[in-house]
Length: 531
Image (cartoon, rainbow, N blue to C red):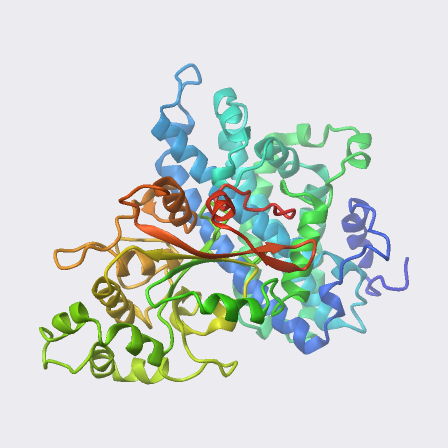
């Protein structure tokens, strides 16, 4: 046993985890580990990842409910070709599953090396590492086996799901590789050994204070329920699961990567989220340069590699934001415009200006907006993030890995009306269900879409919703697709402003042109080697 192995009586149970692990990278190429963080930083990261795991698990449950409702589609006679609408529904559902699987796998791989952390000398890291690793594994197995049980062995369906579909973020053979891994003897062994180890680890969890942490009761119960589901499905399949030859295991180049994502990619994803957190590819100087080109009302799309919001929605671009500028910039842009002044004069109380109306209609929000963010920068952006519809500054909203800026071809009065709507939405919770028919919670694109929605008094932007997993919604990618589709038309709705294109391999971003931005929405969502 290596010096770093756990020194508990139950340690032999963990050997199964290591038996099926891939050969570790050489020291020169090895990514930094989350276990290199100090205890406080490690626990904070673990709690944040546990929150993400809970969201992924809930998303997978919602998808399972959707599959149950459309079960007849999956059981359709394979001699009967799917219609385009049926294909759309099947692909968007599989793409959403794929998103959640890969995102959960990132968490599992990040904490995989808990088996090498001594339990007696580093109980917090060992305990939290196990909770995240086994919590992610049981989530993957329960939902993966359920989905594989329904979809496997249906030729037409398997062909459809296995074809590359970049617009949905699906690489070639994703479904075939998923099937191979979801019933892999190695991961099945990890399920059984992990379940046993969980009970023997309980005293350590108590000692480490892990059982008192937020969401820990949830993950303990989730592990139990998911394990019961996975064990039941494995029992139905019987010994055929274990029929693969031992050579299949040793030759499997992706043993450690349970779901269809290359090991190197998944390790990089985890490393980036932990060790490049707060160090985006776009520099502050580049953001300041783009700011000189921007106007209130501009629409931004943003992406941070391997830290993707809107998991479950397809596309390279995961996030959209509304740029409003600073309070002085907003006043300079709107308050002297003739059309804006005429509109403001019709509002109750006949305010002196548009910004005066915002200040009087939303005094608390205006005070927050007129202040500065945690980095000391003025507020310039309204965006819907996990904390809700928020005022943010350039460090949060623009210092990302990729940033695109588009300008609505609208009069300033329409932009003012859109910003007024956005102020009304500020403070509302984030919409983890992507329900565009409710105004009580909003996802990022929903904020932009509803702020610019056409009405009798406002020309607005006509942005069509799309069907994703049986519901009407708007992935941020669709905004760039719309821009590309309408490009060159006299009646186009959006103009190009700027594109800062990340280069993960070089650790920086470069200014790119309109042609590159038009193509960007076609890029694969989980591709590490971005162009």
